Length: 284
Image 1 (cartoon, rainbow, N blue to C red):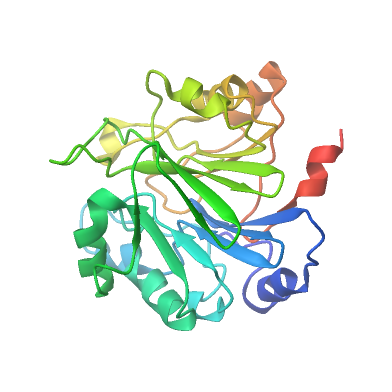
Image 2: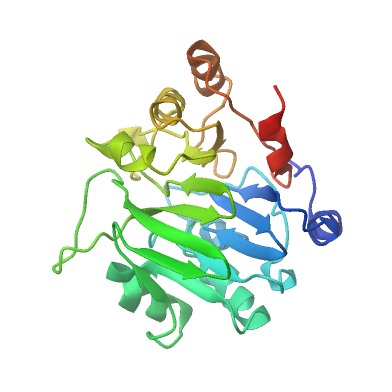
């Protein structure tokens, strides 16, 4: 079992001790989950902080054996302003994470694809009017964050009967900064062009790839994530969606790091519980 760099009391102390100094901080919480801190506000992105999938698939032919120990109990994160879900897969919409989080933060804003509203309400057992629904191209502002939805293709470009996208990524703008969390996606035509105009500072991209034998929808691999970051002009790219489940992972050093270096694309590989700070963008 991989141990987080920081977890539980240590991680919580690191989060709450940070200063509101005009910059931002970002902690990787495992899989595709991140905590963004800026100006005393907190945006939790696609958190998976439970053992729900390991339990669900334990006696099946597709066991989800956890590789990294959980970083923190979601009930302890009682200072969250906004939380997002990019799509309905459990590692991005987990009731065992989100229900205690909603209880700990009664005023929290939950951002989801509008196409998934009924499903989200059923899984979380909440009023369907509570989530804030997004679709591709729409922008919503909350707690100083401006969130624009970008379509994702996991592994295809799905739409519901009303033409809405059930898989999204989000560009989050705050202060002078712009962050892109792709959600689960492969490359598609026009993807880079959609993103270039946002002048992305940080791109959070999956690297686990798409392998049919896994029998799950695939994502960008390390090479593609590095190239996409370069194509959209991201100042730094941080890989995710690995080191969570044994059957569906990748190693950053196999492709991602090598290709980033070849492209002269700035990158940062985090350990679970590790912090990235905006000051790192100012150093060579």
